[in-house]
Amino acid sequence: MKTARERLDIVNTYEELGSYRATAELCGTTHKTVRRIVARQRTGPPPERPPRPRNNDCVVDLIAERVEQSKGRISAKRLLAAARAAGYGGSERNFRRAVAEAKAASRQRRRVFRPWLPLPGGHLVIDWAEVKPFPLFCAVLAWSRWRFVRFASDRRRETVLGLLGECFEGIGGVPSVVLADRMAGLRAQTVANLVVPHPDYVRFATRYGFRPDFCEAADPQSKGMVENLVGYAQSDLLLGQGPFATLSAGNEAAVVWCEEVNARRHSETCAVPNERLTREREALRPLPSLRPPLRSGVLRKVDRLACVRFGSARYSVPHALVGHCVEVLAIGEEVVCLHDGGEIARHPLVAPGEVALADEHYGGPVRPPTRAVRPKSAAERAFLALGPVAERYLRSAAAAGTPRLAAELAALLALQGAYGREALLGALERAATFRRFRAADVRAILEAGILPTPGLAGTALALKLPVVERRPLAAYALEALS
Image 1: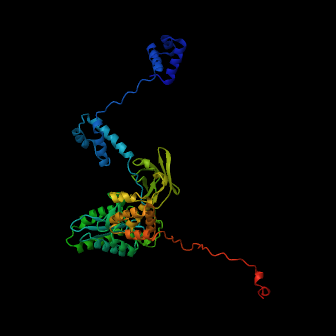
Image 2: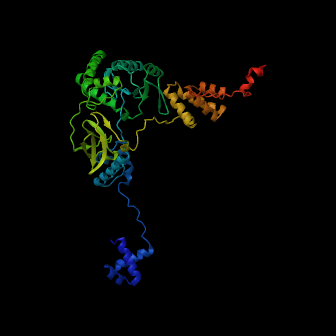
Image 3: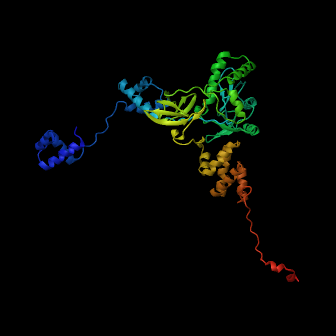
C-alpha cells in the first residue's frame, strides 16, 4: 500500500508527463497503480464501507446486563447457554471475546474506592447479624477497632437502645457519631431517601450527646468495618462455641470472646484495641513506638482502594493502577512507588496501621458523604421544586426526627396558594433557622408577616436618634447664665 507521500509524488509526476507508463517507470510501480491513484485523486476518496454486522450483535445487551449484575464475575461459559436461548449462533471463541470486551468496558466504569480515615472518638458502627436462635448485635469503634458483641432476644427499639447504653459503658465514653444500618427499630420513616430517626432514638442520642447517622440503602461498602466483625463473630464465636441454648450462656461467652479479641493485636492496625481505646478516651493519636523492619525494592499489587501495603501501612497510588503490580522502595524517611521504571508516588514513612494518601491519586480532595434527595411521591416532588430553601428545610426536618413529615409536606404546599411562593420560601427559611418543622409553625410565621431577623451577639446596634442643636461651651458660662 502506498504512503501519502508516494501517492503525492505519483500524482505530481503524472501531471508533468501525462503518461501512465512513463510515470510508473519513474516512480517504480505499475501503470495500473498510477491510473488507480490518479483516478482516486480526481474523483475523491471512495465511500466508507458500512460496518459489517457481527454474529453477537443480538446478545450484546444481554452480555452487558449480566456482566453488570455480576460485577464482572460471570464467566463466558455460564453465559453461553442464555445467549444460545436468545438466538446467538456463533462460535464459543467469538462469544468469549464479546464477554471479555464487555468486562473491560465495565471495569472502566467501576466505582472508585477510597480508604476511610477515622478520627479518635469519631464513629461507632453498629449492625445486626442474622444467627439462630438469638440475633447478634455487633458494634465496633472505627479508630481503635474495639469490638462489642452481645446476643439479644429480639431486635426491638428498646433492645437496641439498651445494648447501645451497655456498649457506651464498656467504652467509657460516647462517640460523636453512631453509624447504623437502616434498622426498622431506629428509623421512623424514609422521605426522599432521607432517614427520619425515631423520636425515642433522637431523645436517646440527645441524652448521650451523639449524632445518629444511617448508611446508604443497599450499599454494604459504607459499613464494611462492622460487616467484617459480623463475619468474624460468626466464624470464630458461633462455630467454635455455639449454638447456645440460653441467652445468658450466649452473652457470657460473648463477653469472654470480646475480652479475648480486644486484648489481641489487630491485623489491620497492628495494635491492641484495648490500648488504642485508652488513647482514644483522651482523644490523642500518638504513633506506635515499635515498627516492623522495612524491606526495599519489593513488588506489591495495588488493591481496589488504590493502595499498596508496605510495612503494615497503606500508601496510595493513582487509581488507574488498580490491579497492577508496582515496586515499593524505602528511601530514608520516605516511601517511593515505581511503575514501568518511573516514579508514580512518594509518601513520608508512616507507622504500622496508618494510611498515607494523596488527593491527586483519587481525582481531587475528599468530599464529605451526602445523602441524595430522591423524591418519589407527588408531594415530595412539588415541595422540592420550590428550590434549595425547601431542600434545606427538608434535610433539617428529617435530621430533627420530625414525626409525620410526609403529611407535613402536603400541608406546607397548601400554604403556597394562600400566601404565594416568595412568602412561603421566606417562612421556610425562617422556620429552618429556628428549627420549627411543623406546618402550623410555618403558618404562624406567614400570619405574623415580615419580622426582623435577630443578629449575632456582639453586633453593633444602629439606632436613629433625634438631631439636636449643638451649642458651644461658652453658652454654659456663668456670665451667660446670669
